[in-house]
Image (cartoon, rainbow, N blue to C red; front, side, top):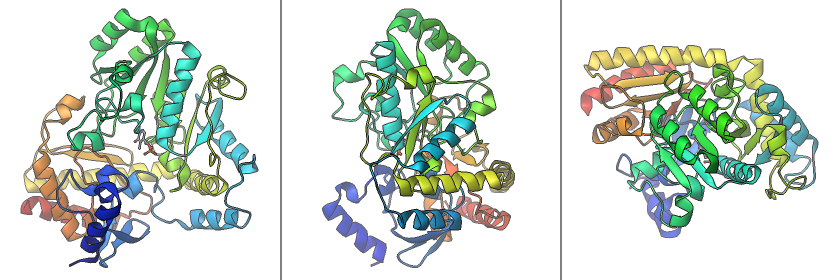
Length: 425
Ligand SMILES: *Cc1c(COP(=O)(O)O)cnc(C)c1O
């Protein structure tokens, strides 16, 4: 029996489902997860000694690749001075200033420990600021496991076929209005009927938890216009896209300023970090200045901020976003050529270093479209790649990530393996 198999059997005795986050259990693709021993650059090694080229990158944070030296040094350096203070420390000021300088809409920011905490805090703040209760979200957008937002939420929830979680009171879910992404008419209608009761619209900057789909031209402009008209806040969830697609996030690419932005993943350099920020007037409603309570024992943790700052500085120093676009383009060319060779008309999409291959042809603008993909075929492809040394995310509905540690040779090798996997599945 492999070491991974043994560990998973034991894990299931002590951990629900054997995992600490559901998608890791491979339910979306069948089979059992492998256990990792070590990760470096674009590779991970499992406990049975297998080497894999990794396109998950710890679900987004590893934008420089795994265990980059600058981040390791920063953590070791910070640890010499202590691992947690719970007292204001200088790196908090530096992180906050960096975020405010880089992200156009953010005037003040608060650090938290995960993307979930960031979106949860945005929702409470928007409700506190507006004095309203209702929230609009889009089907297939995942914003972490916040009660109000676990309604038609994407990725893990989708793969498991439970779009709504047990344990979320119907009374609370009733305050979350869900719309199909890119449906301008539905958006207009919901504002016409209930606009004055809507505290905020929350949206993933680029929806990437139900595969990867993009806003139609004019959709965000309409969203911003309606929110301004009705005094509703726009919460832009850039937990995945922030610092990955551009220095200033996706918002800097489209030239729109949300009221609030949620950040996570890349910002922590692989340590548990999130942040939320936005308009000064809204952020000043937070405790201790304002009436909206929000707190965290480990928020602004010195190790986490040292790792995050080191990663952000390195990205900036290398102009990593331009290089990631080049690598992304090389990856796209390889995949498109591979799909052609394999005779498949699957829908490949990419923005910068994020990508998804939907196992279907045709247009995809929302969750309903995305659900036509052939999930069983994806599962077979996933395992055929894994056997050959490439690790893609174990779900059709997850985006893949390229890092600065992927070389063109790694990408070409991936292309060969993917073609072989397509032929085999
Ligand atoms: C991952 C993710 C979250 C949740 O972040 P966690 O750190 O897992 O809590 C929220 N929103 C988006 C868009 C994400 O991709």
